[in-house]
Length: 285
Image 1 (cartoon, rainbow, N blue to C red):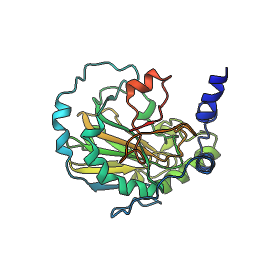
Image 2 (cartoon, rainbow, N blue to C red):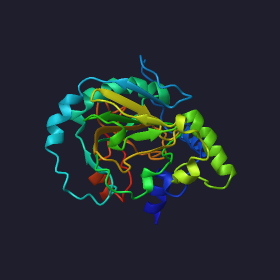
Image 3 (cartoon, one colour):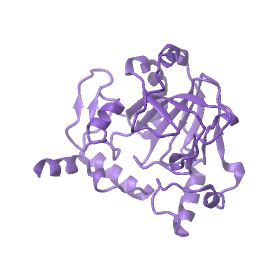
């Protein structure tokens, strides 16, 4: 009994999920008020425009993941991955050089040193139309967060690319969808039939590129979709950052044990997530 109450107090998102921009902002400031402060953001040479919520830039060293990717067994069926998206975790020591390059830009956008939730290789066969995140939606973990997409092979229009509406357009569309009674939450999946009534096709951004490029996207503020039916598959590396005050973070009882990245990063291996009631664990590496 008391253990369950303690867990709910530690992870209030399990029974209260304020999945609107206003609700997420209220939760963010509440969590920031009652938890320890994070270090300030790092100086960044590349900035994510607040009104757009995304940027495409360049990155060095992505070729170092080639050997790791070649050794992946894609036949393993993980019960927690999506049927249209195969996911494999990457050890943190193999991607630290990439995280170091991205961290200043992400921290400047989020407003403090962020949390690294996952580091993964994604493979999209693009052979099935299941629904879910193949439909327009926004994510609900935080007020702001950044997902980074780094192509491991060339991604073009025929690779089922990640597509988005910039944050300012997404805000306008979200308000209109709520006004017309189509949705109540950011994470509601919306069909193209409904969604395309609220924006011009020219406003949709298709994220393509070669290895060595990185797209940094606030998926809590930008409507998006990906891994749709296509003639070619898609292979990319994915980093997911959110703030220390995210709804996925515990309000207390965090464990810091790394002298360098203990203040900045959090890793959630998929197996550990499944073992711990399919929820994120708070161990910071």
